[in-house]
Image (cartoon, rainbow, N blue to C red; front, side, top):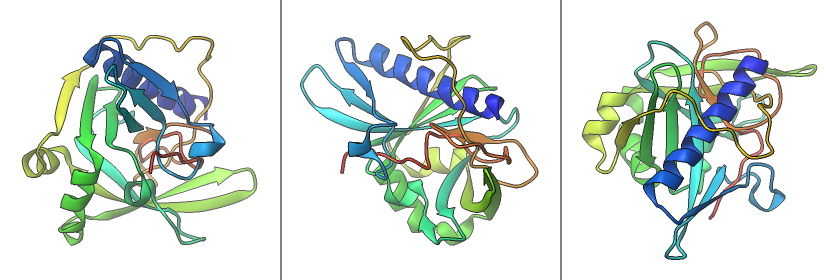
Length: 212
């Protein structure tokens, strides 16, 4: 569990560093645990020097060979709750391939519109997450990086520096894995409970946040 959690934290750290380097003078606010942003699919608020604020969703992927995104469509199959890819109010999804050392920036509304028009072209994967005595299923679509890059304007990728800078006053804390399959390691989302499957993006979700 700690490995999954640490991976999600590293993804957030890389995302934060990239945002600050991209726009000198900007500020990044971590709202993963802010109740005002829960359930809206935003992990960070990016405040530009101009005063504009953008919502950022962060995903981290530990799979060494994966060249695919995991787009979460159902966060809890047993309760029929939608996945963050469908409901997130984020302007950008920052998807970090940790092992490959790449950070991808996806204009989320544009990517979502593109995907929904061809969702049947992509296989669905199931992941199983354990939080205490409760086990639930997450469902997502596995989409090749190349398809998104060729189909959606504004998608970009950059090489990561060797190590992500540490967040001030924040230790490497645990984060759940929302697996893209039940047998292969994969991406992580940004925040808590414990997850048993390591197949999907690790993100700080189950507590989702957003700007709209």
